[in-house]
Image 1 (cartoon, rainbow, N blue to C red):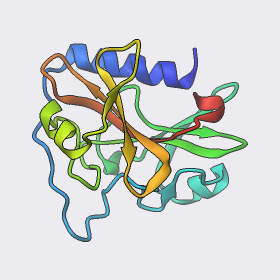
Image 2 (cartoon, rainbow, N blue to C red; image 1 turned 180 degrees about the vertical axis):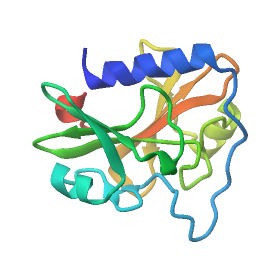
Image 3 (cartoon, rainbow, N blue to C red; image 1 turned 90 degrees about the vertical axis):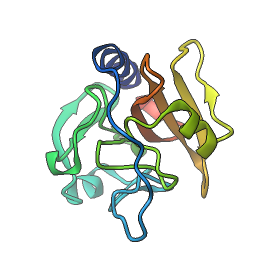
Image 4 (cartoon, one colour; image 1 turned 45 degrees about the horizontal axis):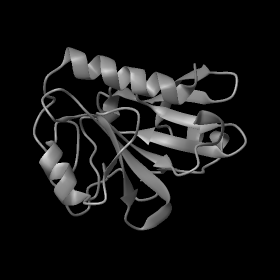
Length: 170
């Protein structure tokens, strides 16, 4: 199973397990917990694995055959069970999962409502064949996209900033 498949399965599990994760967060000037447009804090898409580890944000490396997977350190906030940071050893960081403490520059976070996400990212499109996973362009980074997974109540159960080309992690 690919790392991406594991992330989607994690989204499904969380969506079926929890109804809603909380209210939408608003962007605050100077807030370091913004996920996007290039990364999260000192962790960036495309960053080589040694540099990503040196940020101190990654813990619990899971080495797959083609893609490495990490969790964000617990102080960054709880993530969806299938979310985390995916690293292609040859291309660097490919995906950074959101947490209960992080949000997009437009304030979308775990628990945001579908309508709020659609208003913030009007280009949001469903990711077939799944009916509850959507992608949207990342303003300020044409090489990235957001991925939003919604639960049965229409709230964000998982979100991530990911490279448009996921390499071995796709």
